[in-house]
Amino acid sequence: GDDLRRNTAPSQVSDLICTLNGHRSRIWDVTATLDGTLCASASADSSIKLWNLDTMTCNSTLKGHEGDVYTLEFHPTNTHLVSGGYDKTINLFDVQRGTVVKSFTGHKAAITSVIFNPLGNLIISGSKDNTIKFWDVGSGLCVKTLTGHLGEISGIELDLSG
Image 1 (tube, one colour):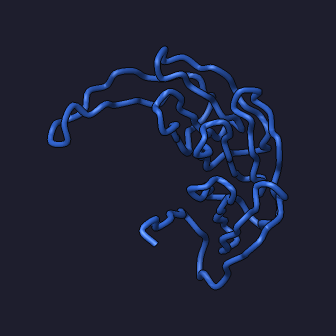
Image 2 (image 1 turned 90 degrees about the vertical axis):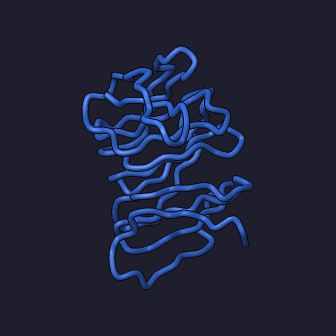
């Protein structure tokens, strides 16, 4: 299971407040909504679990990948969740319904990182195929591919300062 820890102050050691159990295999990634009400975990058991952080219980289990789910992130509005994994597929889930509403394909190897831009209209993905792709959420099309990396992409961050 995963441990959730809450810091009481930046200079103090955090206290364990809860352990969330439910996955059958290792957990690769964890993300939370900006309002702190939901947490999602990506696992090698091919599932994503949505956790209610008020009750510390699992709300639902999302299915849509074959093999490990390596990465996930909530949409800025918290209504959707994007995930990527071993199956080279990026899935966009409706959080309330728990269903895949759109899939994005085009990477030639496992997806290692997915993020939304601040407006939520682009998904940016990194892969073991050494590329970063920009996906239009509305159309599902890849609008840009960055190549030239010497190795796999292990993470993506945006600099919001411009």
